[in-house]
Image 1 (tube, rainbow, N blue to C red):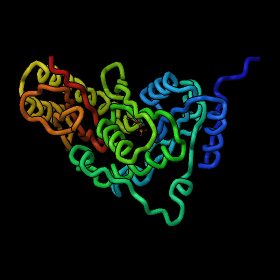
Image 2: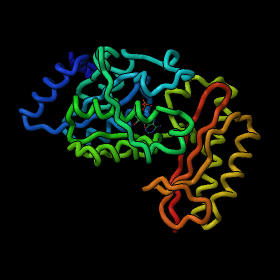
Image 3: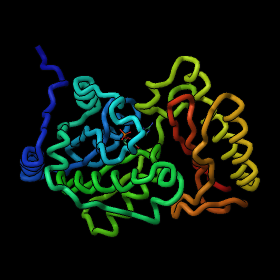
Length: 289
Ligand code: AMP
């Protein structure tokens, strides 16, 4: 019988991860890292496939990082499915899973933080104080632990991607950071582990985010000033039952500087809004002709 392709190495410690990676390097292979918090879906799997195009071996980390959750956020409720994740990682071409526990990542006495204050201003940085400090710190640790040639992150979390690019440049970490496009459900909703929280009714309404953002992005690309369209999208979301809207803004795709007027360079329209208790984020590129 042909052995199933879902046997995959799982490592739980920094030492075991390093040993695994060193073996590959000794054999002349390149290594990619895909950091995740698990509960994997097609969006994550697209990153693993992209990583496999960029390097010979792919390590996927699965770690629900407590330091990037605020005190009133969903750390305890966050979906976890280690066995399912291992099978999905194997099927997407991952070579090893790194699943450290919290004590391995943050041993007694841990105190160092990585802060990228300017990139982390606005958008999710304002709505979730301390979030990007937690992300930047854990991603820096993962990069130092695995020492990959390349690491792949989704544009779904676009500000996060920019925070990571900045810290890698600032700290001279020898890794290439690659962004990958947002993977969506057939009706346009951006895939997210948090979509599992939505009721059937909310799931139906949730598609409005992408519908509104992509229509606005087209009009902005054609020359309509950003501010009025952001106001329209806010109204459209409220009309279908979204509650708190944390932000609805157009920002420069490189600098994340806010744009209210006409868009003349690559930009993105960003939204974060609550449907019931679930906070959904999305963003869509704006490419002026
Ligand atoms: P998370 O598990 O939510 O921390 O996400 C792990 C990585 O997967 C991050 O780089 C995310 O940006 C990326 N990701 C999550 N959802 C998607 C998606 N729908 N499309 C592309 N990348 C995604």
